[in-house]
Image (tube, rainbow, N blue to C red; front, side, top):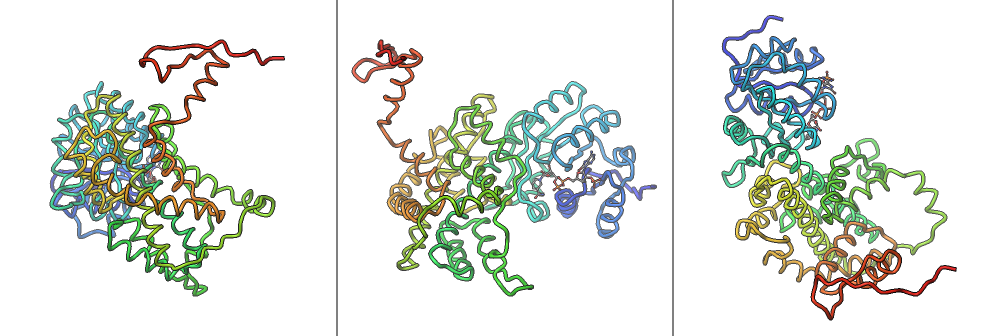
Length: 477
Ligand code: NBP
């Protein structure tokens, strides 16, 4: 294919699926000329033809694609995460020059990013693992971008990244996260937090549904929440979902959608990383497990006639319930972010990434799926105290939790007494109560460990650091 090149392109993108196409249109709209390549060349042709008024250069071969780019070349890969990223990198390596930049904008596992970073730098090529959040709309209009890699490479990419990213209060929703796999790591935790947010909203919905709220009423509740302190993209789209009518039946579409949820893996990766770092992320954990339980539809249907529980009967004034559930949702959400940020902080320290939690929260304020008004407050909390040990202890959030905790307990109790599963609400409350407990029953646990394994224990009446062992009774035989 002969390329209609009049000058070299500023940027190249490989992988014209939904994210790639929208990112290309975004980059082009900021005044850059963009070269594009897709494995299935018909997709390239269709895409370029559909946007013939734009500064796009379609290539049928990677050789043509690479030759169409100005040096140092800036090539973003937006293909399916995993093997396809390595395949594309291997195909590119012999075609590139020293100093060219490859950006992986997919949802790659951060350890893969670290491996690719080391491999490419040995070859004199520069690599950025950049998390991109915001789905199709964000990619087109302005995503939140979480780039890792060397600071010098970020400096080269900064003008393009800043121009295509979302803006909040004039600040671009992109920052250099840290070296190596830091960008993809933070994107992974962002996705884990997204799992938590979504599950918490679903638990609020389940309580309301059991209390007889119609989809139309729920649309109103969520719209009103979106005008208040819970304002966020996920609350906003939830309100829209409740208002959507199925054209075939005239019923609320949400009531016709099967109750099984899928997942792609970033939530699971987040949990595995939390376990490795010994950090509690019980809300995200509950959210991932809730998706797994939802997918066991046949088993749940079979068990529903065997295992007993109360028939849900929630009465009382709806406005009162709305306020209580609001408080439970908001408090649980604070916990979920506290846990996710704790994990980022712990991992950042472990890897010596020099992460700035205030900046990370700031770039999540726009463009991404978890964008929310309260991210301004999280940003403020870390800006005023970068060493904050836990988000719950920032004065703004401490005050909210103290204010919400009674209604939060009442909602978890109400749901439990009515047999309504609220795994993420209750996991969040359990974390809150455990974290604020000066005394936990782990004295008994440690005694058990000493009993069967001579693991020793410390004593409340002796200085810390002294260890004791008891010759417990012999119970065998
Ligand atoms: P997909 O993840 O569905 O990937 C499809 C693209 O990968 C197509 O361009 C396809 O080419 C290409 N591809 C595959 Br599959 N195997 C390839 C190979 N061996 N060599 C070259 N190209 C190959 O696309 P997406 O949903 O746009 O997502 C792109 C990335 O962005 C993923 O990592 C995803 O996790 C991440 N992400 C997605 C979203 C979202 O909302 N979708 C949001 C944020 C991040 P073909 O046309 O020839 O099959």
